[in-house]
Length: 186
Image (tube, rainbow, N blue to C red; front, side, top):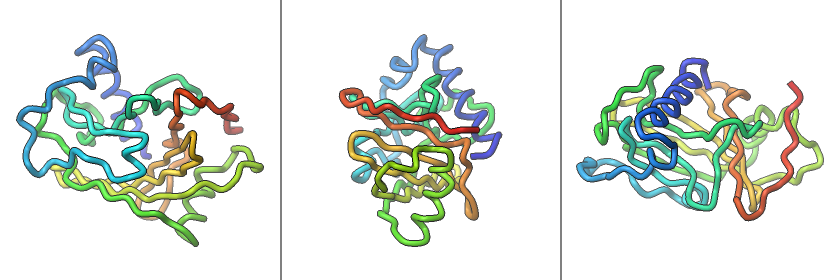
């Protein structure tokens, strides 16, 4: 994830907190007025961990109830905004996802994404199931992410056309089965 998108994620989280007091309150906004072309349902297994939520700053991918999407050090909640800008504005339901497709990956595609994601993590972990998620927004921007499913937890990383950004990875934790995550050595 580029510095610009990282800043957008933090700016959105901060703006939501200022606007509504808490991130949880920010994700409970009314979706009335959402355009018919907006994707509101996630494919499995993304739907196991996540949901599309409506916020004053547009639709976001966020954790599903019972799960937490967090930075590796646990310092911040992660949201994936449809408004892909450095300084998000309150645009309501006019910013949304028009495509969210998920495909299981294997072979070279899995190996390349997993190598960047897993650098600095526990080498003794079993290999997860890997998935590519391709997203598009109403403004025509696209985003590719990879998710690695370990059953009671998962990880995700954002990737461009040619590479993945190790600084974009985040943990997806089942609140009932919290694993002991080892921090990357950076």
